[in-house]
Structures are given as C-alpha cells and as structure tokens.
Image (tube, rainbow, N blue to C red; front, side):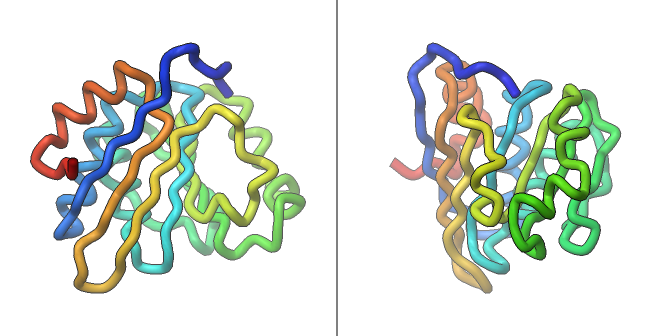
Length: 165
C-alpha cells in the first residue's frame, strides 16, 4: 500500500436519502482514487456499503458490482482494477490470509473492504475510512475520513448536493 501522505487529513460528511445518492457519493470518491488506495467501509447490515462500492466500481468503468459476501473477494476489470472484499463471514485475519489476500494487496489496484473491523490487523495505516450509519428506509449519514487535500476538494465539489456542514 502507499506510504502515508504528508498532506493534512480531512473529513467530509454527507446525507443520503436513497441508494442512488449513496452510489453517487461513492462515484465522487472514485474520481480521486488511485492504484494502491485502500478504502475501509464501516456500517451495519443494510447500511449501504455495497451500494457505495457499486458507485465506485461503476464510475471506474464496470457495470457489474455485487456483494462478495459468499466469495469473500471480487475483482473488477476497471483501470486500475478494484478488489472488493467482504470480511463479514471471516473468523479473523488468518482466514483472510489463507484465502490469499496478500496476492491482491501486492498488486496495483484499489482495495474496497466491507466489515474491515473483523480483520483490523490486516488494514494498512494509510487508508480512507467510510462510515455509513442508518438502515432500512431511513436516510444514511456518510462520513469519509483520511482524505488528502486534493481528494477532499474534488469529492466536496462532485457531491456538493449531499454535503452536511
């Protein structure tokens, strides 16, 4: 993964009232992602983590994005490629290593990981965190943390209609 940047760390807050809005916010983040970026997505069941990932993957050029809950990882042929992990069913870090995560982490691509708290020791220090609160029909509160200055400015502009002050 990338070395930590010397730029200040930034945070943005959004409010999403639909799955489409959640995807749009993900798409806004996609424009600032590069190979070797790691995005950790936190939130309960049904919060919209996969919808957020779908926005990223779609913006990067793949129309297919589904939850990798049963396969643990899906690779999307975007540029750079996206490695979408779902750690929900894993018993811990050893199981993630057993399934070959190091192969994905050693390749230039963007890692999206749902349920990263289940494999905390695997997470790189330099990562973008996405926290999504809410479920069901209620609006979602979305926080994106650890953004570089350039990513902060780009996402703020691209998703300005969803920004919460």
